[in-house]
Image (tube, rainbow, N blue to C red):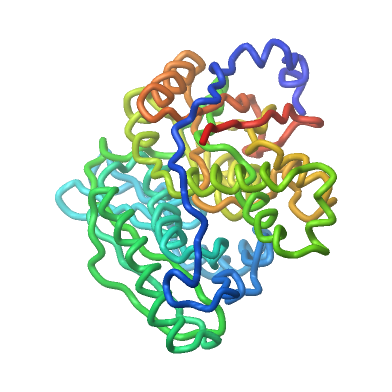
Amino acid sequence: MTNQAASTSKAAFLKLLCLTSDNDKMEVLRPFNPTAYGLNATFRLTRFSDAKGTVCKVSQGVLAKLLSPLRAAGPTANLKTKYADQRRFGIGTDCSVTPLRYGVSLVETTDLCYPIIDDPYMMGKIACANVLSDLYAMGVIECDNMLMLLTVSTKMTEKERDIVMPMIMRGFKDTASEAGTKIGGGQTIVNPFCTIGGVASAVCYPDEYIKPDNIMVGDVIVLTKPLGTLVAMIAHQWLDQPENWGRIRKVVSQEDVRRAYHQALNSMARLSRTAARLMHKYNAHGATDITGFGILGHAQALAAIQMQEVSLIIHNLPVIAKMADVAKACGDLFKLQEGHSPEVSGGLLICFSRDDAIEYCKEILDLEGAQAWIVGVVDKGNKTAQIIDNPNIFESLSKQ
C-alpha cells in the first residue's frame, strides 16, 4: 500500500459512501419446478456442467501466456488511426474497439458461462445480461446486434433438450429485447457440458463509448452491484446436499440462503444499461465489469491498461447479505474477501471524480432503486490494483 493510501483512515473514507438503502426493488421469483414443464422432479440444469467457480476460467496468469502469440502478431491496443478521435482497443480490455471508415468504430464482445442455476429461462436471461455487460462497461448504451452461442449437453435426453434449450433461448431473447436489441444468428453445437453465451456488437461514434484508460489520481471507484453471487448460487444448491449444507448451517439459515439467492438472481439478470448511460452524464474516466476473475482480478486488468501511472485501491466490499459469513465458513473455496470470488453478470467498476461519483450513486438509486457504492480510491502507482488488509465488508440488503 502506498503511503498516501495508508494515511487515508477508514473512518474518513467511509464518509464518501452514498446512503445505503434496504429498499432495492426486487422481483419476487417463484422457485423453478421441473415437473411443471414435464421434466423429472430430480432434474437440475447445474448437473450438466462440472465446471463451477474458479475452475470454469483459465487463470489470468495462464491466459496471459496463451494470448502472447496474438499480442505479438501486431498492435492491438491504443493504436492511433487517421481519425483523430478513434483508437483501437483489443486484448486486455472488456471489448475490442475496431476503427472503421467514416469515423465510426465497431465495439464488440463475446462471453459465455456454464449453468449456475437450475431455472433454464432465468439462466438464459442472466447469460444475455452477462454478454451485454462488457458493452456497458465501455459506456455503450445501444447494442446493434447479438449472436447466441449454445452448447447442448450430450448427457441430456431428447426430452430434456427439447424442453430446456428453448427455455434458455427464450430467456436470452427476452433480455436482448429489454436491452433494445435483437438476435441476428449464432451457433448451436453438442458438447459434454451445457454452455450459454453470445456476441454483442455496436457501431459507435467516438462520443458513444468511453475509453477505459483515462483514470486519474484522485478518482474514486464505484461498484454498481453487490458481490457474492456465486456464493449465493452454491449455497442454494447445498440446501439439497446435507453434507455440504453442514459446512455452513451454523452461520446461515435456509431462509437467509433463499433470500440471498433471489437477490443474486435479480442482480445478475438486471442490465447495466442505466449504469452505462449515467457514465456519460457524470464523466466516467474508465470502467470494467466484474465477472469471472472477481473484483480484484478485473481491477488489476483495468489498472494495467491505464495511460497514467495509477493504482486502484479497494477499501470496501459490499456483499449480498450473509454471504460473507458463508464464504468465511468455507475456508479458501470462494476467496471472497481476497477479491477473487467469480461473479456472473456482476456490476460495473467505474472511476469518477469524487463529486461526480457521489451524484452518480444518488441518481442510479433514484432511477433503479438499486444501490451503488464507492469502494475505493485511485492513487499514484505502477498500474496495479489491491484490496487493503481487512477491507470493510458490509451487507447489501434487498426487500422481497
